[in-house]
Image (tube, rainbow, N blue to C red; front, side, top):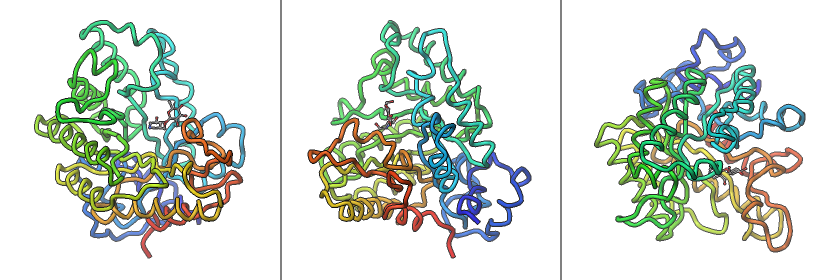
Length: 376
Ligand code: 9MR
């Protein structure tokens, strides 16, 4: 039986046992573990009390076009993943080519694939500075920004209500070098609405689909650098502020685009997860990969270092709290965003993901299995 079949039931309150294929139920452990997750709302859609002894659900970002025409790619996703998230498709640039249009083609195809294969789909993302179509620059006033943002979230979350159990509502809201006075990243939403765009987005999504897990997603928090320390602090301050005001929010997505040549700040990361947990929030790993442009040329050495980096990162999180899900940002080195920004000086292709270009598992896949598998 494939791993997917053991753990697919772990993907959400939304997937009732009665709707699961028999083959899934066959593999589900019955007893619950002592994991800290309960039945509370904060577990969101990605894990429920019935699977406390099951594995951490694993997933990957997917390019939906390749699912249709590349057999090996589709097979790899089916073999390894219980969750999918569109690498694109739900971003404004894809969904909103013009102010009046919503183009749901890509996410509709991905959710059909997920449904047909007993998988869950995460939604990425509703309020982000990046991947914005040019027309959004014309959003001129606070009222107009509020109108556009609310209409977008109502329409998109509404379309997948009850089907997408977990949304990255806010993506990368913290500045790259945040200070106490200027913690937020520039975006059309921040320019027009100030930090109110956070609350507005979360409240709107919650009103449309009260069962959805609302996630704030961010990156660059895991290294022992001043930048990461400042990002963790700014992120925590933002989370505290939202919780203090009873804004609906259930989880933090730690992206995990790890810099292979830098150490993981295990203590700092564990402490961060503890603080997040103390706020009653779940943690997800949402975009794991290892940026390897500064690592040795040797394939073997590079893969070992990447795997060790991923192990340190996942260990620092799991030591404190079991994440509700672990997703990598792609599945195969064949298709990855990394060379868009981090090509190697020696011209060798990047190797950031768990499977190589020929879909063979690398050391990183073993690490992921160690953290996600059903306990013996
Ligand atoms: O991997 C994605 C790439 O294909 C897109 O061109 C880019 C812009 O939409 O976004 C990349 O994904 C990013 C994700 O949405 C947010 N976190 C960082 C990811 C890598 O850049």
